[in-house]
Image: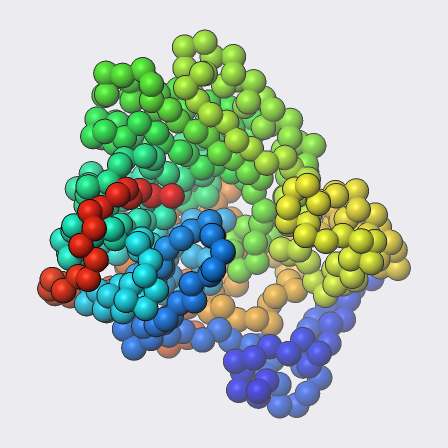
Length: 452
Ligand code: SF4
């Protein structure tokens, strides 16, 4: 299987280390194992309409809905986003392919909600037609539609209206990720504060009362001021919402977590912010929001403290020596650490100390250390198609705040993927539309959400 280049078998690769703990090289120890293992890319999603019959759990789950993947990949170029980077290029499922999957899936499962999923669903070239035609097709039934969080600059009220047709307008979720304009340039999240205010004003004016905003703390080059700017953004959102709706009972929830650098992204070389600094910054932000008499009460604040993020960082960019840390923490009794009530930072720190005692690296080395250009990274022999030189250049450009456009709508900037993988961008519009189908369930619609 390894010979095909599609399956990674770690035992077929040896790792040598420098005296200071960095990787010297990774080599295949089997003549037939390739020196790099490549990802594989499905080019025609319509040929792969899976899952056809999703399993329906007997227990109640968080997302009680059928999911249809409407496209793969994302070339918006957010520099922190591993999912976007490793699934390039963008490949859309056609409107008719989506329609068929929705029909077959609903018949097979009996679900009453369909999630139109992807990394940025509002970017589908025919999302307006998809939403309208599905809403038409299932009008008068209990079938609702939802999108995951929407990009600030891709939100449009017609689309949101289709998604909530006959339903309630409970909440909208946006992810500006960075509080200040400067830091959003660093991460290549090309949305301005004005975009955000314009979007939420439209939403509040059209009946929405609640907006949730996601941010990250600890991004490269970030300062306290960048994070404190989030409080100012939230206040402007409330102010704009009160003005647009003429009501006082509108809300904005700020949700923020620590940034964890990920492999195969331009930030794979970045130092992670230590947990003390993350917590201090988040507390300053919390205090700034609470101290505001005019708007503070309308702003909800949810955050995760910095310690779990450091362990996530260890697992995210660790090499095979981290396997011993995982085994050690398990031997110490750790179970279900993803649940905060079971998580023990001290347990992980002790396990790392114990398991790494014979090698010149530790928890800090894996997390809060910046990597150099020439360092061999533990995942360099796994090929996502991205050119390492392009990633480095994008990392350097991020520090100066230079932005990169989306290659769907501007010329290719040679990230390496299409050449390396023999792929190309596949987007519509197809110009096709969905025809009505005979719907079995005649019960009236109850409620839907525009986003989650
Ligand atoms: S190679 Fe060019 S077109 Fe393909 S994903 Fe990269 S930037 Fe976009």
